[in-house]
Image 1 (tube, rainbow, N blue to C red):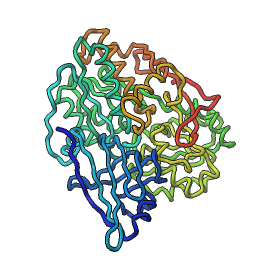
Image 2: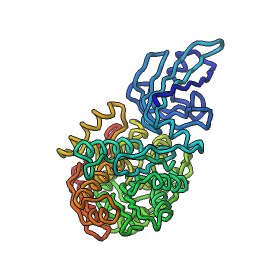
Image 3: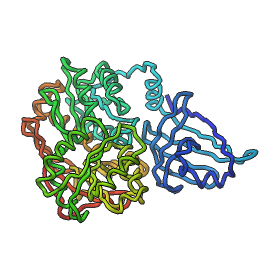
Image 4: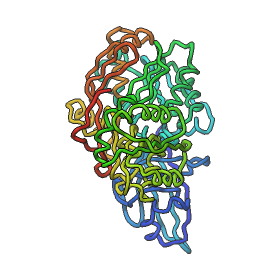
Length: 477
């Protein structure tokens, strides 16, 4: 199957030049396909709610890749599939007609069919098959925007070097839609497709649901991204940063940057944010912090005004932001809009490059992140990774971050272990991984056999729409 082209139209009672110039500015009003972006400029991140294939609107994350004002806007996107959308603006009686032309490739078509509840058969593999489960839609789609790309690049590199056991590695990707129930169904699909190992870059809620659903199966689960720990076993490996070490690394430098030590804990009401805040109540006071408040909002929330007002009234100097993906970006934007950034800085243990660029230039000042990987790391392996990533996926691909790069590394770690034991069977590969030491783009990753992962940690501060380093910020997880 090649590329399918679909078209839909909207009408706006304003001249083409006005509609073109206001693109993405009035998303709250719901017009123009629900578009949201800060500027009509090449390279600007865009979120679009596209009514594709007659079903519910699809949230598309991409960048403006071409402008021909006031006639066309082209958006290149990677979520929930790779493709292009072209918006055409033409004069019509009383206003402007906007035509949306979308390209849907085979993977995009399969994603749409599954989302509509239609079964889609998986192709027969030529070699060992692994599964990747991530959030191609829902709130987590922002932080997961580069995960499928990172996974594909890792598999391509492994196959270029001979595959595993002399056979090419095959990859199948699933979308949990940032929902544990959907994640469970997708994980079962991956298992039925012959995946003996499944890598997850998802929320902890999805990890725990999938782990439970696959209990009793001879199948290895590897949770790649930062998490609170727990739920490990012989066939359950959780890599990624741990919140207690992240907070211990960041507390002092962030309080010095803020010029104060009063913290407010704010995040989504689910497993990982509550675990981070539990760690914060233990770790931060030991570093001289004073906790002045705590508040939560449901996954998918967009109105944070009551919470922002509580933070402002608390006199906080630092906000610990444990919101996820799109929620984290929306929260930071609202903090800025309501003037909270004038009195606080923000630390996000899961704040990464992909989320930061959705926060936008104006709202990013004063935001800090702490993780094992940032794009600016000056290691030879990272330089090679970034070159290959851009060469493979182009200049408009979403940025790599700790969350997506963790998938790239986890698949390579698995391949190294499989080659060492000359098997892709879950138990011997898992046993080999658990006692391994691996040199990776983020530095050296070491596992001690007791569910502890040691890796370098870095504290970074927002510099425009990306991160730069802070001088006194390095630690180990």
